[in-house]
Image (cartoon, rainbow, N blue to C red; front, side, top):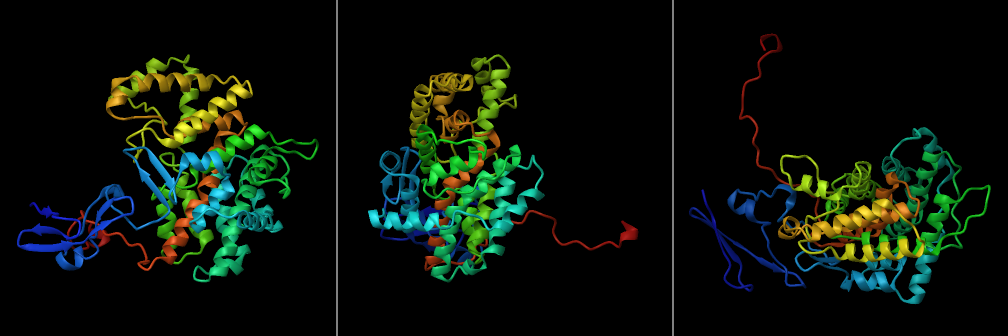
Length: 437
């Protein structure tokens, strides 16, 4: 069975024809001339639904937060190119941009920073949670658990329909996530928790909670601050990805912001999403342990009968060079050169990139290095353990999650997410009593 779809002009709806049935589908055009077909009336008018495994071609919403053009390698937050934001703003300023839709004035930024500083400490009873986790617990499991548990300690900011409560929840999440993350690291290494130090900026505060110990002074490395700030900005939002869609879907049920963000953390944990940078370092370690023969592993990656995959290459959306990868590679080069850090994994990464970018197999398939390829090398240079990589990703992605959650709730078309399916199971059959089966 076939159906036809005809689009005459943008001003006129598209006509979908199936047998004797016809339906008019409005054409929706975005501010960057992206086109979409509004199929919201399809089932009620025809009894049919669309089937799009993995939602590859399905737009779940209209959003004004992030524009992404995978063919051209363009990424903009609220209209601002990612390259300019990384060059001129810090992470807190970009967070404000995403959440409120405009860059702050100096006074607005100062007030936002001050409000975050007031909420950096965790409730003391929450610290006891960490003693219940085993020492080798993955930090992402701790992060999602503690974020979800925040809803039990901060019950004065749970109502998603109360703007003042939402604002309080936003500031608590942004302020406390670095503390929660740093405590998960301290738990894994058996060191005492370090309280936030509010005279430091956002990234400095996180690094001192991660690496300071009570027995000696700790000086925050400005090179590490600069590199981490850049990474957090690059991770801050990326349109309707798996974790962001999860936050929106959970939030559509009017779940509170803490619960919605905890769900996003769980989605990000997956190795095909936020865990990819951890997988890149594991792959580089595997190649290094096998003598560093990059050409061997490039050949294995091209062999369809072999299970080896080159991690950190290609992207679900980008069919060009990931603009974030360019920024992070330059930062990685600067950091390792300035600090005179020799990392054999970085040498392997450079050789992998050069080999892949000159190999017709990768060129034809447009498999360029993505954001995960170099971020793990920077984290290693800063002394951040592999298991914390995805936690850092979650810290960066937090303002994007919040922005989408807020946008969804303010939308006129907001409704609970409820995808359809094409059922492929057994047709009706009689239930046989258990003694006759």
